[in-house]
Image: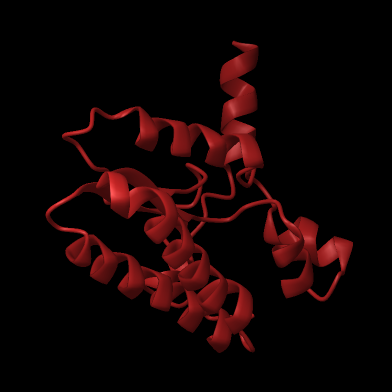
Length: 159
């Protein structure tokens, strides 16, 4: 996990910066962290994951400072609950536990995150969305979910 989430991000950033961005003094880097990069939810056995995401936050903040004097933007996307294998792994590949985890609301899907990235990139060159939390509307905080979200939405669609 450290190799992918920390070293992979750092080595890739170093390569891209030095080969294309730094010579031109312009470009955009978007790192993917997590809402758990700033605050840890009460799940056992995930300390390394949360530490990895916190590292991405610190790395991005430092990189933003180190690229001063250029037009390089360093942005961070912080997804909330996403329908991915990670959450399936979190519940030990138990479909019933997965359904319970997402009961009453819809998690994010890849298209939601793509829309968020497009929004971040669509800002003029003079504007940076330094960090964007992208969560399901029902995710009211890191650990609090509006489990009635789907039922209310269905009632509003029918009327």
